[in-house]
Amino acid sequence: MFIITGCSHAGIVNITKHAQALTEIEKIEGIGGGFHLVEASMERIKKTIAALAALKVRSITAGHYTGFRAQVELYQTFKDNFQSTFLECFDNFPFFSYFLEISIIL
Image 1 (cartoon, rainbow, N blue to C red):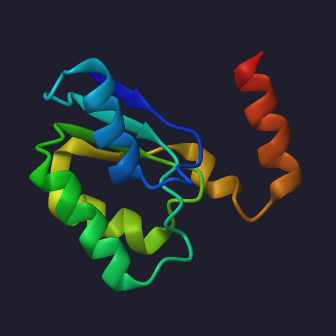
Image 2 (image 1 turned 60 degrees about the horizontal axis):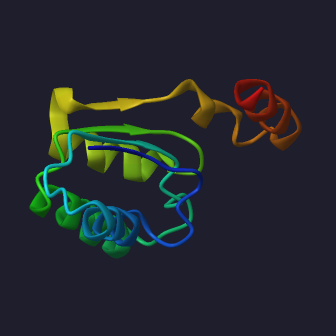
């Protein structure tokens, strides 16, 4: 299973576990999207990433509102199985991010 998220306000770990419960599929090939950790404490970031590692997520693609600190931690944990999306660079420019996300949806 590959999980694609929006901003993950419910928490990426909660979303992943819910997807597993709904589909009865345990193996997570990958997760892509925003993880909403940009303003999270380092403790929360580390707990989130430890939980994703414990779920044996194969690959992570993080973007919108994941935050630099969380992306560094994700890279340190998932190494070559982690990548950042270019959308993260637009987080400081909401006007551009809004139109970019609209164009992707269309």
